[in-house]
Length: 92
Image (cartoon, rainbow, N blue to C red; front, side):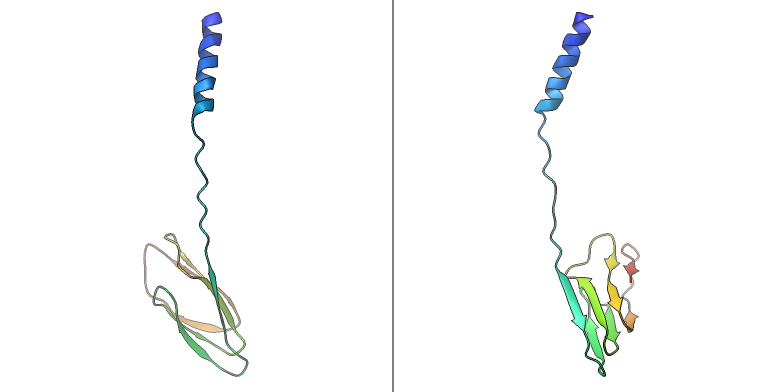
């Protein structure tokens, strides 16, 4: 019984001595495209997707798309000519 207690104590000491990995933090800058009321705008996103925004519309997207997807947010009306990428879906 004493041997089991000593082994458990040694094992927990080894676990406590292992370094804790630092969290990986990535700062993602957002880009905002806004068209004035009564006008239209044509914009090209970082993946070469072309976006036409109607007047009074706003598009928010990251400065650099992630490796998992291409996520954008829109308020108003827009038309997207999306560049195909099977590994990274384009999500509005």
